[in-house]
Length: 127
Image (cartoon, rainbow, N blue to C red):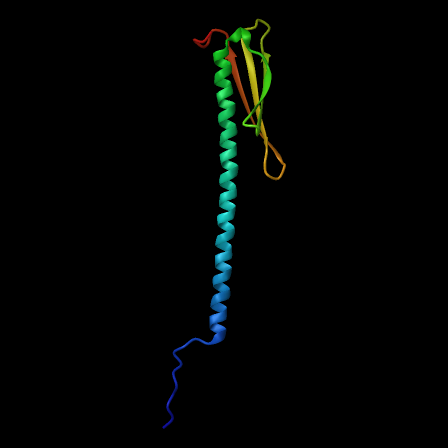
């Protein structure tokens, strides 16, 4: 009678294929992690720009209606913040404010966030 041999181990080809599949999976996970970190950085910068725009709106509201003027400043040597004040009615009771916050990313591309608001004379308990 002939005895059957049962191989309980893996062949070299099976080991190599398992290693290749594992390497592909690990590199895909690595790319996902790098992409997530990059997206987190972009989101953090956009949020920071939005906060700068909102804080400028509040600052201008506290300035006083009659003393509102257009201007520009640089914040944290990264963001350029510009605000333009225009009178929207002939009687001087309404002023429109447009605030643009710009910055450059690590690749030299310019991004911006724009805010618009309207201020009415005597609408706020400020000056």
